[in-house]
Length: 379
Image (tube, rainbow, N blue to C red):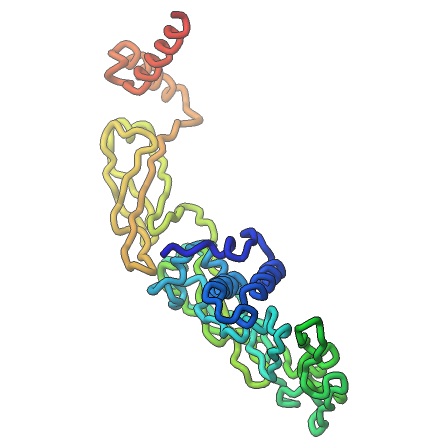
């Protein structure tokens, strides 16, 4: 069965913001929620499809993967695997999604004393040699950790938290709107149910303090531009003992002065002089592992590609090695002395006296084509 596009399911554009996604989901979920359509199997089925689309599009990593690969990103065999995947595969619990958008309307609480840490991203720039050969790099990132002075409570040690008088410690306030009982997070205590009256001097009541964390990142050989490496539990620390987030290393590869990478092949341009192009010879070309010699046949034209197999990049996914492709460019000599100019004049006269079709077949075809073009215009 072909799945409907998630954006079409929610009735939004592909450039929709998180707010627009939540707003559309809330509207559709209220319409098709099983609590409002008891016994209606069709509404229950539609609600599940709407919920599935929301869970993907509201998650930045999943949305990015969906935009790139479509539904195939979440099929079996495409789960998160080290640095190969561009998204996390942690499916949100239904109660989290339901409560985040409109669970309050149906009286479902989403108050929690713990909160998982946020994911972090570090942009790492590598040169081509580092990306091809692999390297270990130590990075320093700003992070948050639980305050040891107050053990994460945010309150000065020995000072108790005060129960919020607005919500009476529940973290939620209730209001009636028609036949709905609306439940909202308390704005006074922000859903915690407690108020800090004596903030911790170290963390200023936040329960966390900033520090610089050093991490050794192993860059695998063959990694490519825009690949990401996922380091589990190396993100921002969670609150009140919750799990930390993950750290994503975003790879950018600098432009190389000689080589250009396309997939797992390397390309480079190598200049050759007119004599070698005409008569042939042996040419020394660079590789990432040193220099090698290739044979240039006589009568080689400018732009010809020479493929050197196995001198490219070892794929980080398939482990297949690409090739090196050298494009030769015939260089016109400059700053000639009189003797050299005279020799070239003699060569030019000799070529003009002989059969042009034999010595310059491309020129012959071009000018014959030009002549035919103008002859056709005058007919």
